[in-house]
Length: 99
Image 1 (cartoon, helix red, strand yellow):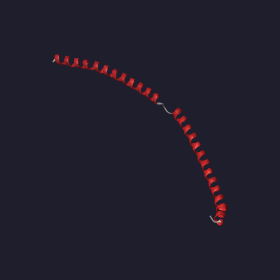
Image 2 (tube, helix red, strand yellow; image 1 turned 30 degrees about the vertical axis):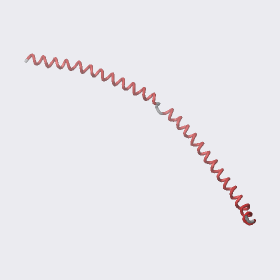
Image 3 (cartoon, helix red, strand yellow; image 1 turned 60 degrees about the horizontal axis):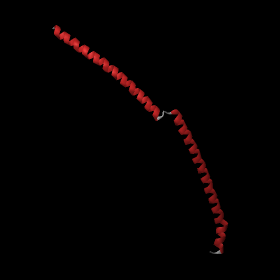
Image 4 (cartoon, rainbow, N blue to C red; image 1 turned 45 degrees about the vertical axis):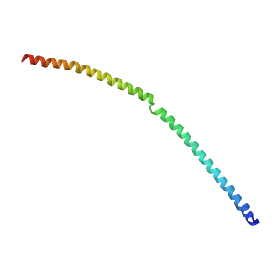
């Protein structure tokens, strides 16, 4: 390499490389800080969701309670219908026999 090119590399290239390296390290540091902030935000969000929203077990428990209550209502209605149908049927038969 000619002495003139070596001088340019030393005079401009080396400081330029150091400046670029410094910029890269600064950008890396800023990105690391942003990622850390995002992790903190995600942790806070997970905590908020865990506190404010129902868990799957709680939803299953409510679902089971609702289904049990609906089944109770269904059985009561079935009992009422079974009592009403024979009474209605006997009433019709008595009318038929009276005619």
